[in-house]
Length: 451
Ligand SMILES: *Cc1c(COP(=O)(O)O)cnc(C)c1O
Image 1 (tube, rainbow, N blue to C red):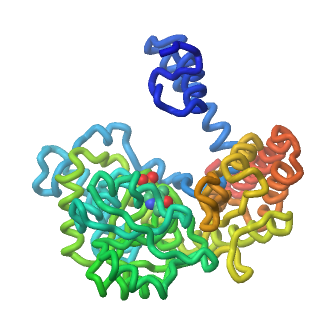
Image 2: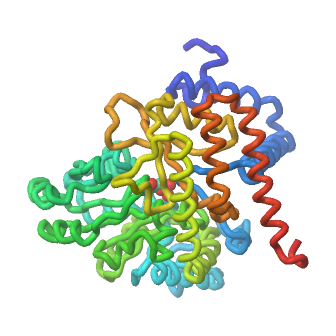
Image 3: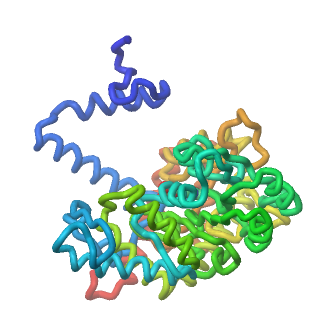
């Protein structure tokens, strides 16, 4: 093995691009590995991150958010290191009675908010929530049917992800790229042919809702469990906007708690059926977990209570900002994805970045301009094309106080960076200025005694 500065020690199997970056950071962090040196290195990285992203960034990445101040403060640093195993009343550990409060509040609030009866809230991510559902309802060798990757099907639905951990066969559901939705007429025949144990809908980009009732009817014909993965849509579902998956017929709902939901990181499984809930719960613990980080539950409970109180206004504001930003981007000349002249009914929107060098390249250029988002596959892309789209989510900027009037300004910054090919550093200065203007508006509108 050649020992050059472009070879990473921690991942010599990574791509050349990743290894170059890893090697650079490995060299930089190795200068002082004393406890004080490491603490200083960590502090510098955290402060720089907070300044760049939390204070000055325009974060349009669809799979992130900021917790509310009340949620952020609803935790203790010691909690994550207190294993809490089993139900309140019969835990393996003694002395955790006060944690019972969090362990009861969080699932009660989450289940009600998402229109279910039972919520499993201990899993660390939606990926693990999906694995728990697959494990509960499909055995090794069984088939699950999922959305194609280029239609927003997530890695945790596909053969390279957790279905492989369970030894499942994965088939792609029939999809209509023009409607940007399932091919409903083809669905019943497809399910009869493949007889999946679980049908997974809900995606990493959702501009339009699914016809959940139609999928449920087809799933019932083959006895399949219908899983709606609301990882991205959970904040809208909480607001009873976009769609109401359990009400419309999904057996089980999974979601990430840190995307549009706006809580701590984590994953949830919600259902109305106590038998399905028991199977998932038993897979989660003792199947997949011992300690599960009770430190997240206080913030989760507070977030759920806040969404129950004002989730509809939040969801509506996210959608209005997305629709306004989509229209502004179209007016600037971007090919905004949509159907029948409509760009989106959610907080997501997308640009076909084919003529911008692809979604990955366009995302990197915007990053240099202080606007943070990612590429996404589009249903009409070629298999070897890379990510053809740019995905945008408005959940974080909405929470920060960006209004519809700000959306044309964001669109204009994106135009300067991507269409006019202006130097990204110049655009960045104006992106930071816009973000700071919104920050100061929030500060100014706070009552004087809370400053
Ligand atoms: C983001 C996402 C996930 C994974 O969520 P994590 O909580 O990060 O594991 C699962 N499913 C879909 C559709 C997603 O978009």
